[in-house]
Structures are given as structure tokens and as C-alpha cells.
Amino acid sequence: MAGYHTRWIRRDVVTEEDPERIAIREALAFGKALYDRRTALGLSVEDLAAELAMAPDDVECIEEGGTPPTVALLRRLAAALDADVRLTPGDEEDAVRFEPHAA
Image: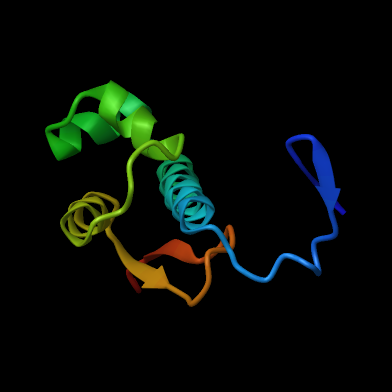
């Protein structure tokens, strides 16, 4: 059961997913994928921001789920991280991944 404000609703009773919640989960999955790839490369937020010609605060905002993924942003990040972007159906945590290019 999940709590919704002042009442309890069984999760199996809720049939329609809130689009806003889906968008939030997608942005969080995007941010996690960026963080995972950046740290795997040993890059600091400042290093990646310099590579992208962005402010470090902008990179942190993406990693925290505050920036919705766009195709243009995914392309820039993939190039900076020397990776391909992999998207899978759904809005789970691993729906977005940056996979390193084959050596």
C-alpha cells in the first residue's frame, strides 16, 4: 500500500500512472546514468563541465534529476563521455545508460 496525502490506497487499485511522476523517474534515471559514467571515468563535475562548456552547477543539476533529457543533451554528453547512449523501455532506474565505446 502506498500513502497518498491523507488516505491510503492499495497500489494495485491505482490503474493510471501520473505523467509527472514518470517524467521525474526518467530525469532521475538520466542523472544516475550520467553520474555512473562520469565517476567510472574518474572525472570530477568540474572536468565534465569544462568538456561540455557548461557550468559545474548545470552538470550537478542534471545528475540530481533536475534536467529532463533531450536528444541534443544526450548527444553532447555521449560525445564528452566517449560512450553510446542506451535507452530501454520503461522509466526504471536503469532505463538510460552510457555504454563505453568498444576499444
